[in-house]
Image (cartoon, rainbow, N blue to C red; front, side, top):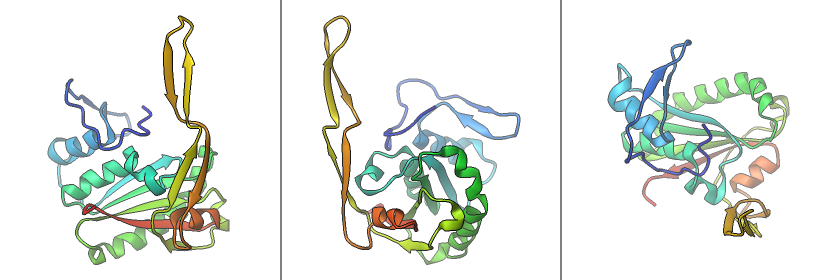
Length: 199
């Protein structure tokens, strides 16, 4: 199910279940972090060499990496000593992700070939721009930009007259230098941002 903004949460107050699908995949009914913990410690026959989390629907740039379940899953694998990559698509048309297969395969091969060159507690946060893969201008190594939300909290009354709050919506703006993730995406580049566990 949808796991946006679950961050690095764990399921502590009810049991977790897993099941195998008809194609042999394993599904876990927990958070992205739960999935990694169960996979590494119970469900996989061998310890993985790498963890790829995603492809997430929607960008994970700037401060959003703090809330992202996709990034958290990669972070948990990194905590467990497994090199990790979180991948997100900044476009709204999720059906167009199929067109990214060859580009992503090439990018992942490049990342795998360099996996020994990253500091030990580093994960890579990859964002794909909302363009046709044939129009991608290249790959940039980036830093996190800064995102600002305006009017993102709605306060209203439900049908019974009780007050409620809804987080989300509003308008968003970005700030950051020429090496920021959002600038790379805005200019049609794939953004690769190294994130470090040592905050």
